[in-house]
Amino acid sequence: MSVLCLVEHDGSEAIDASLRALSFARGLAESTGDTLAAALVGEAPATVVDSLGAFGVSGVSSIEPEGLIPYAPMAWARALLGLVTLSSATALVAAGTDRGNEVMAHAGAMTGLAMAADCLRASRTGSNVSLARQRWAGSLIEEAVVEQSPVLLTVAFDGVAPVPARVPISPTLAHYSPPLNNADLAVRVSDWTQLTTGISLAEARVVVGGGRGVGGADGFAPIEELADLLGAAVGVSRAVTSAGWRPHSQQVGQTGTRISPDLYIACGISGAIQHLAGCQSAKHVVAVNTDPDAPIISRADYAVIGDLSAIIPALVEAIQARASKT
Figure 1 (cartoon, helix red, strand yellow):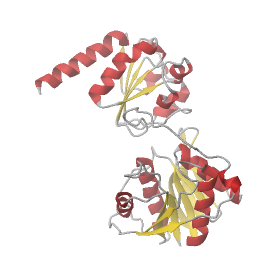
Figure 2 (cartoon, rainbow, N blue to C red):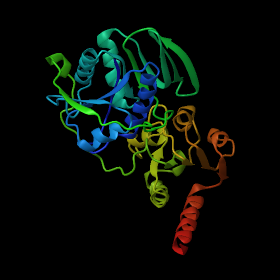
Figure 3 (cartoon, rainbow, N blue to C red):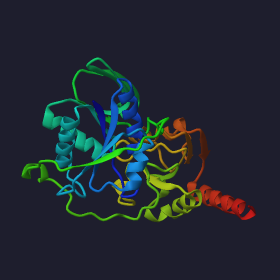
């Protein structure tokens, strides 16, 4: 038997969230001596397959792309369930990305099985799976037992580290053409455009955020300059996207992207509870705000109380001066 993990990739490498899901899935498989298998939708590049072996994957299934590329959530779910049956998988795992959560929700609806999201760890004892998962946007951890097989899980990307296996494996590669019907393909992405947004917000090690205190769309120029100097991604609060100053893809928060950088510099962000839920996994937070009582200050490791229109340019100047001396 096996634990099957959906792996999302960009054509050359698996995304970081999927590597974290593989680490989680490997732990679940090891609890009962099961093998770890992976499923890719579309072509399986050799570089991706090899990298999966480093995470302990013994077998990779490439799901044939007829009608599945770039994305068809119900069809992806149907294909994964077919692989579960073929491999007698005891668990189906995916990263807690937008696609991973959507596909697994469809899998649950198709089978009538419960789906547990945002899992941090799991182990099987007999026919039951004991797990811990994030609830209430990660503000608490729930201990639960799932009494079903297969178990359907998504993994909290900000709570599981991508750890390679102690002993790498050379995985086998098989191709799978799922039997689909028209209903499975009723909803699908027919075309898409890749936006040039620089560093991925979800995977950035440094994030510079701007909120209502930036003052307007033009006020993000110094934020972007600081982000460029630090090799950081730009994030924003919901108030900024609601005002139309920046795109929703840059929103940090419960209804945006949950981030886990080494450093988050929050500029002119008051820190509504939804925003704090999105940045609570940041290792260090620096808040720049004129209000010493703003909620973000209580979350910050360091707070600079003052006008960001003066503080950020001064910080940029100091970094540039230091860089010129090295």
